[in-house]
Image (cartoon, rainbow, N blue to C red; front, top):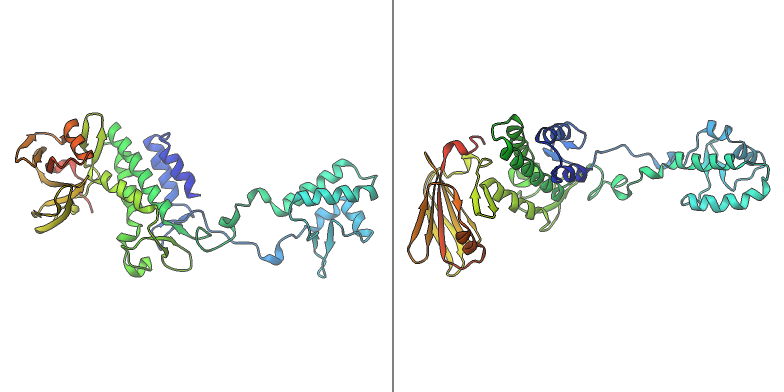
Length: 353
């Protein structure tokens, strides 16, 4: 199941190369739905027809002395034969506990039967029903979280897990092939999520949150699912915001150049103290808020950070760092910091997409 791949990626136990190998395998596996460019919870499967269930192979009955003897005596307390000559366990056996109760009652009439023969009956019962492979509704239904179904919250968890592995790989070696491959895989997972799709492909308005996409139709079961949480986290990851003991550092290596405006626009946001506010954002810039404080990025030849304060003062430094006191003002939403502007070296940005 997709939970397994996400769990091991999130656990932080894989090397960057192992993470790439896992994603290579995942994208080439039967869990990948080409039509949605995304992943089902588990591979689809061909279900056994109802009339083909609880059918005991003839040779298994022949090889069982006690079952053969019971049939010869027309004793159908454990198995029976239908009109087509097929063998079945008694319909009252909901599990092997019921079988065990019946065997205890039957034993008195077959005292010559060995414990080994009875043990073989229990083994045959499990071979026929294969209870250990039963996974509940996930392996027997086709609706929400069923066969062929995409569960979008789990896909967004995969997105976050891939981003975490990319960030670790980038920290170890920014120029490694694994770092570049994980960045590519991140965007491949991201491209399969609703807001990147057309309504025809998604089966609904792409910006509306939906829980599932079953095999038989488009996105269904609308509602604000947990998917939103991971997508907010990964968005800040793309923008490069990383909180540490020294404040906030911006590492925008996963940010695409295509994110920057092609023409000027007015950016509306909610300030901490004064409510509705707006900023004019120029061509070649992008803007977002973090703790209700606007951040404005622009590309340039060197890294520069300018922190603007409500009292009219500002601090400028030649890096992409926000100090502990400045970060505390953001986190506590004091309203002291009104805007943070960053000029970012073009070489630090992902030049794709």
